[in-house]
Length: 300
Image (cartoon, rainbow, N blue to C red; front, side, top):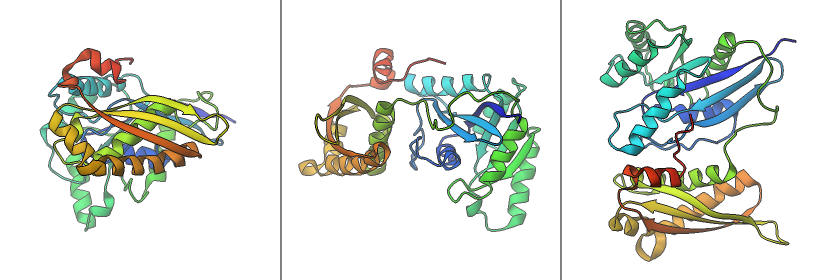
């Protein structure tokens, strides 16, 4: 039986549903999702295995956007480098016939590579009429020659199987890269840190989230108990942000901790004792040293 295996990158502007699509395809939550842009900061590698057909290794990259600081430059660099290292590119867009500067920037990048490109028009569940969808397809066909165009809803799972089928068409034949039961190459600590960051993104005001990072300081099994002790620090850029994150009488921090603990317990399949702290590191997003300390390394 001939198997196919290869690497697929999911690109697109911030907040188009890249992480939601990847999580749905692999059937497990690895990448964090929120309605705030620039949620994914590192290149997250996850694995989809079909014993009959082969293996897809997904790279969920940060959204491609205009960088405003060193963190932004790092994120765009990660996304753009990935295009050259993969077998298939999945480009996710929202349903629209408006092709903006951001989309044109992505098209310019795609013209520099020979990789097959599948366009996924996401959020199909928000389109009222079929005629509208045809207009959106026409608009995108006018700017690039795609190998496939698939309308889908990552949130509801509509046509996601078609996306997977299409990917396998373009993958090369070859042995699997990972064991069948592998879901991700992300270290547990990193996934835990991302879960805490996601819960903070969900809970906080608009002006705070881009300025936060999460570092897991300690993650240790308690001796003689089926319990994982985790200590993590939420890093923010301003004293005023620290106050917002902690909240009156610590209510906000407790909410973030409770929501994160619930999700981490599902991930680890055991009880978790989670302690959170908040520290201020002014302008950390423009410090190369701090970016490295917080896990944003250019290992591409």
